Length: 288
Image (cartoon, rainbow, N blue to C red; front, top):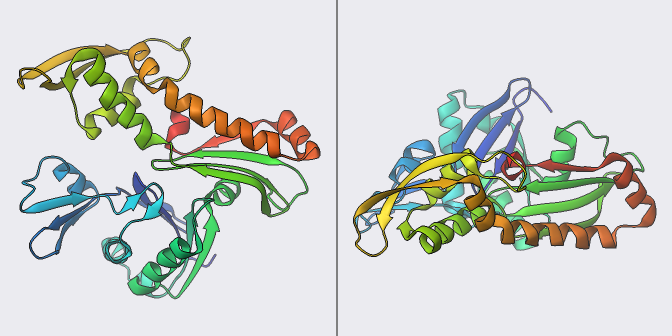
């Protein structure tokens, strides 16, 4: 990569921009605030996220242009890319090549939408790479070796599972179960078990601060504020890690089942490599 070239992760949860020689130069939530009447973009990233769930719906619409790992509105994505390059304040976007990561099961139509959005924003050249391959390269694995490396990338909208060898994905899968599904499970679980209504932002905070996927991990507690499901009045509940574990366990079990299916389809020689070297977890979900 040349010094002005960029790597872009158009995540369902976050937009991340990497610049050669500088590392990550932008990391913003994947949220856009739009004026409903005119369609004008009012805010992008952190500023827009602050509006999410708190804006008058008849005037301002806070949207997530990436859904389940793919572009829902590539016109908005093009504007997002322009905004971030303007924020960098160096005009790099109009002089650089771009590498954009996409989920394993992205269709050719979806890939074209990503490609066109980048060109519309002014990129010189655009290169599309599958996210598991990008993750493997990013953590320093030699993907060109005749050796099996298994990557599980748990993002916001999708979990990408891949066995990589000699520069390609030998076996792979992409499922729409990831960080957002965990948040949704927490929203439903808090309502079901505590009679408390919370939003996605609060659910994400619960996941990050006290979430766990193994019962033996230390139990933490968090005071959660929401609205009583019966009275509609503000109320506070104390929730612990075990509560969260029980809420998200079905989603985690489904992800594990899909990982097992990929392993079952993996050629024996590559399976032996995975047994020896293990599975690499990446993405925000790996932090649990």
